[in-house]
Image 1 (tube, rainbow, N blue to C red):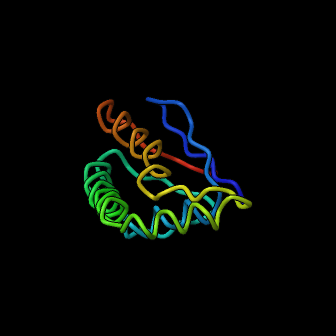
Image 2 (cartoon, one colour):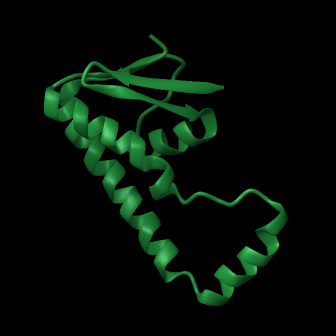
Length: 109
């Protein structure tokens, strides 16, 4: 399933369901087929997502070089893994732009 997140203040962000679920788990929110993050809740959502993104950055930075080399060799025939903080950044930007403009973020509506 593909989710399309929109806001009157910004463009749209498209995301596959597993990735959207991971982000919404970090936000402490349920991801339904439709929904709204009200403008008044965006600051809290951004803070939670930023904390989780920073944690993911630290995990990536602290990964031993040997593990990175092994993953690179094993992954030559596979799609590269995209770190959470990289995958979540466009959604974070959508939240940030929407918060600055005082606009809700919606999906499936």
